[in-house]
Structure formats: C-alpha cells, structure tokens
Length: 393
Image 1 (tube, helix red, strand yellow):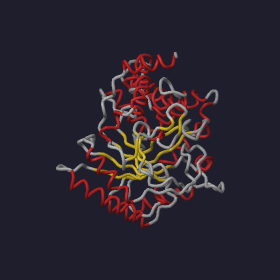
Image 2: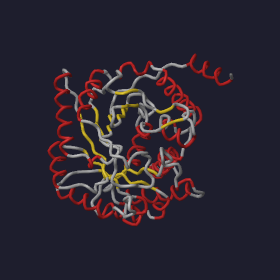
Image 3: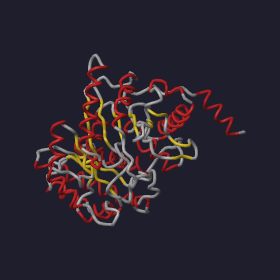
Image 4: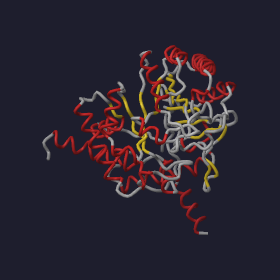
C-alpha cells in the first residue's frame, strides 16, 4: 500500500523530461568479442549474434523521421562487441545505405561521423584502407604497458593481448590514421602513473581517456572498492596531471580537458540522464536511451531497459509509454537529489544513470565511485592547480 501511494505521488508530480537532441547513436554490430576482459560489463560477448544489414534502413528511417537529431549532426558509434569481428563489407554497405537515406530524406542532410571502438587486435592493412576511405574515427582500448594491460585484457585461453593491440596501433600509425585511446584504471594501475604516462608518450599516443573499472552489468565488483583506493587514485591523478603539464600538454587527457572546460565555461548539460541525447540499438533492433550500458541488462525493477524495437516502434512516441515514464521519473529523481546535495553538480549535471543503478541499486541516488573518481577528485586537482597559478593560495 505504501509503495502504491509513493508511485501515485510520484506520478502526480511527474513532468516528462525535455527530449534531448540526438548526438550519439550507439549501434551493436555484434555481441561477440574475441577478448574476454575480466572487467567487461557485456553479458553475451561469447555469442556471435550479428546485426543484419537489412535493419540499417529501418533504423535510420526511424531516426531521420523523429525530428530529434541535433542540427549540427551526430556520431554513429559501432560498439558493444568487437566491431572488427564483422566484415568490412558490412560497414561499407551500411555507411552507403545511411548516406543515401540522409540525402534522400533530409532537405539539409546531416553531418554524420562514424566511429569504431576497437581492441585493435584484428586491424589489418585492409581495415586501414577502409578507415581512410570513409574517414572513420578510431578509438583503441589499451590500458598502458603490457604488465598492466595483460592483467585484465586477455583471450579466452588466458593469453595476454598487449602485443596484438600494439601491432594494430603501429599499423594505424604507419597509415597516418589518427586515433584516441581508452585506458581502464584498476587497482594495479594506480601505483604506476609514470610508467603509464611514459608508455603513451614513447609510443606516440597523444589523446587518452581514462575509464575506471566500473561496477556495471555483469561486472559486479571492482578492485577500486578496496580500502585506501581514494587516496591512491588521487595521488595517481595528481602525478599524471603534473606530468601532462610538464610535457606542455603533448599528451591530452579527456578528463582533464573536459573538467577544465566545465570549470571555466558555463555549460548546459545534456548528459546520459537526458532522454534521446543518446540512442542505443542492439543487434536485433531493440533500443534504449539513457546509458548505453543498460541496453543488454535485466532488472528486477524494470524487467529490462528496452523501450521498443526500431522496426516496430516510433521513436517520436516512445516517451508516452509507461516504461519510459517510470525510467525517466526515477532518473530525474536521482538528478534532483544530486542537485540538492552535491557541491559538484555544476560540473556533472546529475551523473550517469547506469552507474547509479549498478552501484547503489537505484537511479534515485547520488554519489558513485564513478562520479567520485571521474568528476570530484579530478575537479579538486584542477581547481588546486588553478588557484596556485592565480596566486590565490
């Protein structure tokens, strides 16, 4: 009875979020990954389900008809499985179909970028030729030197993958293909800021984003949960920030750049908590919005986070469904809690829904390890550096 009353009160005061402009479309070309990283959140990475080429047209007819797209265009990220396990011919055909629809349907065709997030172990000269022909953006997952990378990023037979990833990176570099790196920080990383920094610089890697080992999806725990990690993480980032500045920003770090911009400029947030800023599409056409990590997951509260199938449901009306309203209401409630209680809210906007749900068991919550490490600690380091620079302290 109490729960029913709470739901009634919530529904009575609920106002749907304003729809965001679609900036990112995450498409799962396959569930399969040739690696078996022990911190991965994806549940079906050993299965070889693939997106049918026949789904590309209905996906983008639906998206283009939605009136949700950012006028500046959007990025398509081929992700949530290893995209290079799908043949080049698939992407060639898919990109051509998307481009044709964009020209036919839209009076002012959108600027569309394509991005692949890859472990780089399967990169060949043929892939490099394709990447250059279609001007794809490339992100490579590598955690630093071999002894750090190979601690987590292994094959199903337990073999380290660092050498294979570096071979792929060298091919990209030999073909003058720019790329960024995503490095996952786990407990083992935190004692080696200099080794990780030197590895990136020595291998001519110039742009790095740090993810943390997150509690998310099938990854139910994190080595960063251990006692004393906050101080070690702060020391790591403090040292890394110092090395970046000593090198006169020869290595750019996403977290430092993003937080510096947020501190110095007024910013209007449309993050993962804003519906339709991001559309996430599974291999079978099922779709969600909010955090992409929610797409393949089950939930005792919501059943799952799928809002429909792109071939059967209109994106324009999905926000009228009960399931969307329940998700949106609970995510909004968490954002409001952050706004009321967190002094860092102006640098974050309310956090990532998936992290709240998997760390705290509910969207109606505030601090997570993710926000503490990727926002709060980084912001403190940058603010302290700015204060010293300005002579405030």
